[in-house]
Image 1 (cartoon, rainbow, N blue to C red):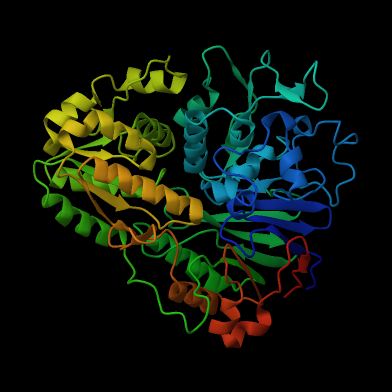
Image 2 (image 1 turned 180 degrees about the horizontal axis):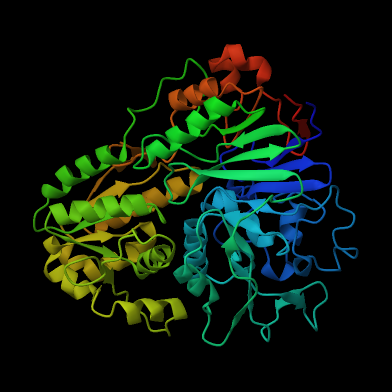
Length: 537
């Protein structure tokens, strides 16, 4: 049976992140992921040089950070001074939906730019996570993933856009692969500001094709963020599988194994597969021994037990709830209470609306919330946390007075708090339990973090900084990667045995052909924006 379907990788085939994939069949088109390409973004921008919010999408389209495609973007973010005909001169045809694998911003961050007419298909957990993230960040056009505010031309400045403050926030339409619990619907309906309402469609359970002739089946996989999915698409008589980001060595590794079994059974026409941890060549030595989440917990327990009565920080990635649960157990085993930031507490609160197994024992004797000193008024989400968990807060004075009672979940962005905690930090431990630095700017962050740790009289473990070169080095025993190592990726491709392989989310796409010479002829030569025909069975 022939197929007129095609797969177009718009972004992310030769870098880690920024994944944007378009599946087309006749008049039907769907996007799979629409992430922020940080590698491309950081060619031009850094912390203090950002895209101009008053110019909508002008900067990102002009610099090629977003692909110029018709029917993709919010009309209110295309100022007529630059786009007098809107997107009519862009190539291509509009998609009808977005399929989101998971809630990491390199897969979903650019959804903020997309036309709200496009429904976003995701798991309930992913929607809850993104809502929490958006509420707790600075309100900006680049963050408008789950809700947005219309922009209009500034009345006195040509080509400048401004928020329409009189309008309520508007929800994006989300369609949920699994159940859509009532508490999640209540969360999505709630306002995000004290003087602004919320309008727009409520999330509903996904049903039927996502576009004419395109049917999708989502399968859970294990990753370093909860709610991750892989996809099977039936398109014009052909089958396309997309791995998203996955691993086998996390707490939900059996879910990834089930996905692999389905791959083996169905043998897709096209397999779009991540390659984050592919080596560059056969000559490159293998990485460190693979660590599981169980390994992380075992090492962390042993290390924290070596610091009785002393201050300990656990530094792990944002939104990594599995790692948070690991350190909750580490704290309990050491007779400590895990102290979270208010953002962490709100994330757990939102996630619990989608998954009642999420730990939210925020109270004395359970997990606690760090009371950051602030002179400003609290935002609505902060008031929500304080109202729900009024007895969970603990301040710097109480922690410093009895440092061995707590295990504090901080990151580099909380290092300022060490000043208020300094009476209890000397002789303490900063346990780093996250990924290595990616890029020069992150390397500088680790140098700064080491300076804070030194100033506080603490010891860093999990990373160190070479004083001669200023280069951070990572030991890895307190971190399990969110991605499968090369051996697992090769096993997945071999067992899936697809007709065509499309590598994405990797800096080494040619590695699949080198490591699997028997599959070399099946590996597509990918160029951003060039359709790859699916063929047929």
